[in-house]
Amino acid sequence: MSPPRVLFVCTGNICRSPAAHAVLVTAARRAGVPVVVDSAGLGGWHAGELPDPRAIAEGARRGYVLDHPARKVRPTDFAALDLILAMDRTHLRGLAALAPAPVDHLVLFRTFDPTPGAPDVADPYYDGDAAFVEMFDVIEAAMPRLVARVGEIGGHVTRPSTL
Image 1 (tube, helix red, strand yellow):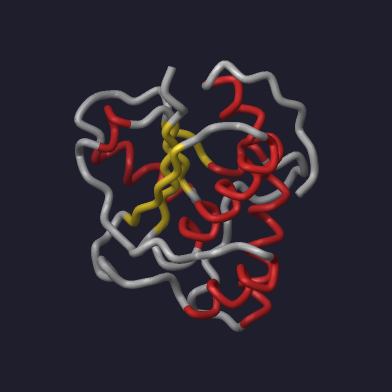
Image 2 (cartoon, rainbow, N blue to C red):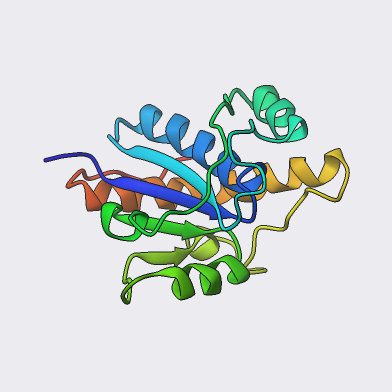
């Protein structure tokens, strides 16, 4: 059985989705859950670029490596993946509109957040360093439940844990 394939999607694939990508890679490895992780943007403005330096810096401070070059969502992604996670409701609507057929594995990322609150991971791009700290806090809070779900998809029994 091949490992589950997960895609995170945000606007330009330089802040939220590459951060979630890096956190899932680390959290799944720590939990012993095999997974193939990718990230993409609804737009291709930053295609080929590395993540925002502020995301890289905050990720490094937390022990994550953000080195995935940005890319745009491809029509083939919808059939090739087991779970597509939209970082906010705008991305969810955009992905649903791009999908060549109805997709049941398209989910809002904060579905996995155990604390009630806003359904979106706020875009830190136009804000200062504190917004990147908050973005990582939100992503890390949802990660244990996401790792457990990925484990279920792959046939692994996992227990949610903290990072």
